[in-house]
Length: 102
Image (cartoon, rainbow, N blue to C red; front, side, top):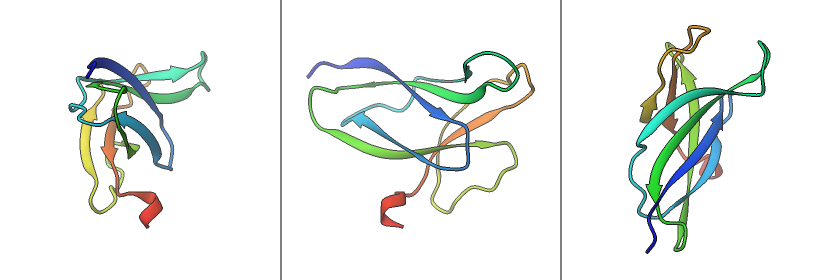
């Protein structure tokens, strides 16, 4: 088993994203806010780093980013919070119930 520190990203939006992560992964080591591209209209993203193994089985998790004060779906599990961005946003990364199962 080759454990590695792996980087993932989730776009800030109103839909969850399925992320394939190595089975046996550890909770995120760090969660950061960033942007895809440059300029004031560049899409906000949340990046996270987690230790895992991609040589073996992988599991899919559904992740979604929420702003402070936004409602969370039933069963959401917190993964991390970013520092305040230059725009004043603080993003919160959650694992949400499996969208494929309803």
